[in-house]
Image 1 (tube, rainbow, N blue to C red):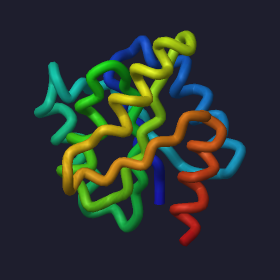
Image 2 (image 1 turned 45 degrees about the vertical axis):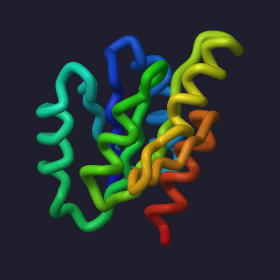
Image 3 (image 1 turned 180 degrees about the horizontal axis):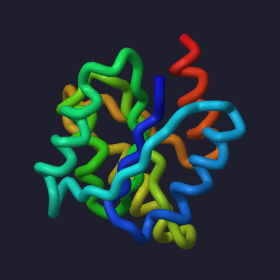
Image 4 (image 1 turned 60 degrees about the vertical axis):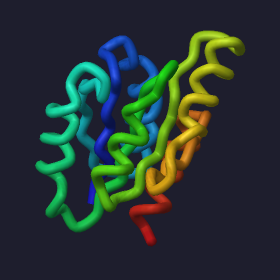
Length: 128
């Protein structure tokens, strides 16, 4: 059982750390990757394939603007995907949340704004 964090960019590491700190507090194992669905789709698929036979995984995607990462992960995995978009201010937050909420059919992404709540949601999902 683990969380797999995938960031669209290494610039998202500060946001990811807020999530991994919470995962550590809850005793949840995790791994972290940088892979853009736009720029490195094969790398994202490799991450998903490497975890396909794990007993229980929750993916956490950290991407903003035109967030293809969350939908790409959800469409190519049977495990839950939580999108926790980073943002620098309220205007950026609205753009990033909006892009994470609007997913095509058959790409179930749950959007969690607060990194602490994201870590807690991962724990609760894995506890089910």
